[in-house]
Structures are given as structure tokens and as C-alpha cells.
Length: 102
Image 1 (cartoon, rainbow, N blue to C red):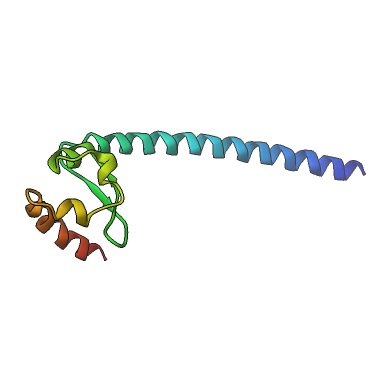
Image 2 (cartoon, helix red, strand yellow):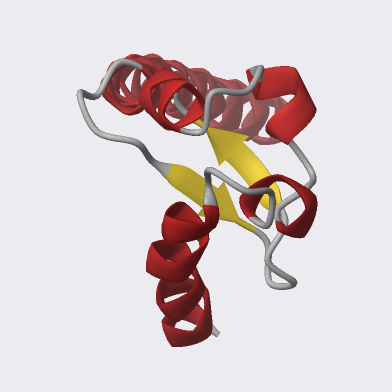
């Protein structure tokens, strides 16, 4: 019985150590994610993250400004926004990229 208790305490200690390491890794990952999110959002060029069917999943501030549209309205749509007059050149630029990503 004493040996079983000792093994349980040892395992508990190992799990606590692993848990602390995971928490540190998670904090580092979150910091990295936040840094790259900031770079994406405030990049001086427009970035769109598209779904596999060509819908806008994410769009940064510069891209919304280039397309002269509210970011909220641009999300989850691509053809409606890019086919309007005044943004056709953007559509011609983005369309080959969409095809290349498929």
C-alpha cells in the first residue's frame, strides 16, 4: 500500500511539472499569436484570408480601405464586393491568387 501511495505521489508531481510546462508553452504561443495578429491587422498592404470556396474569412484594415468597404460587410463575401465597378481591378488581381491557392 505504501508503494502505491509513493507511486501516486510521484505521478502527481510529474503531472504538475508537465502542466506547468504546458502553461508556459501556451503563454508563449498566445504572445506569438497576438504579435502576428497585430502585424496582419496593421500591415501597410491589404491582406485577405480566403476560405476554400473563395469567401473572405479575414481581412485586414488596409484591404478594407483599398476596397472602400466596411470590414464587417466584406467578411464572408467575395464575389459581390469585388465585382462592383471601381473594384474590378482588385478582382482581377485577386482572382488568379484564389485559383493558385486551390
